[in-house]
Image (cartoon, rainbow, N blue to C red):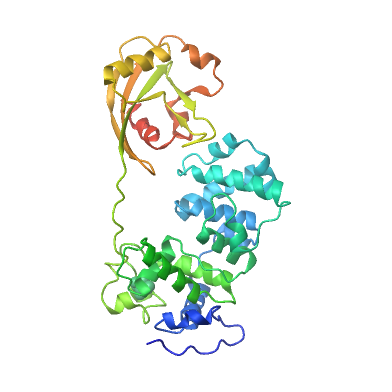
Length: 376
Ligand code: SF4
């Protein structure tokens, strides 16, 4: 049964929701205090921690969703050099935002960042919402990111449940369920909420993020160094390596396409996809779906005709890539041309780039992988 929760003392962390206390096998304050003490000695000094500006905190949180801290730091600094204020981000063309994001992947984040900046500037008078409900109205902000911005910028006692926190809670409470199942999700949020203190919530939020990044590591948690080791149920059961349980793989359809790498004077033709829709604003080589009735040879001939390209196309290989809702197998063909393809001369969304320039272009998944074939 749950341990009786001691009253919070001034300056110490105290829990914001007493009704959740029976969910816990230990005092919530104890977890918060252990984390805060540890954070005082071991917490990381990161660029976005020196500010309470919601714009900068939000930007960092979005970048960190699928990117390591080491990679995100450079992007964060370059992004702020181009867009020092929310107003400047909102006023920029979407293409510029996407191009700055090149290499970070998951480009929907860049599109949502731009769209959210426009909402805040044009509909909210330039003021970020200060609570979770308001933040969740903005494009690309889910409950955990909203919680992080509310806690870090506005000191709101809002829980977060990012990948690091999810892993810690699965272990701390020895949750033996697929961590993204509906039932597990509900428990995890209740635990996250119960542990979040009302005071020092900024530091607590950073502390639990750092614990996941530095100590409660995905494969080999460093339990002897962990401030929560005496409370952790996974550790006491010897399950810290097994938890969280693996999420069952989602079944997604298989699609096929071919891409034409049209080469002219050491450069390749690429095109930007329309701003709206799937992979909007990203670059790709000329492409055609192979999921209709046509053979590969017929499809290749059609794609070459579309671009007024003649000559013998060389098969380079096949790329496999998993997008959010389908798997793609992309067959690559290269064809050298003597003159500019007619379409590329007139279409403002097409351009010719060298392989070096393509490395820093915002190509989407499979087409980014195609760059490995350019040198062959
Ligand atoms: S004791 Fe180990 S498994 Fe438990 S929270 Fe700490 S690092 Fe993670």
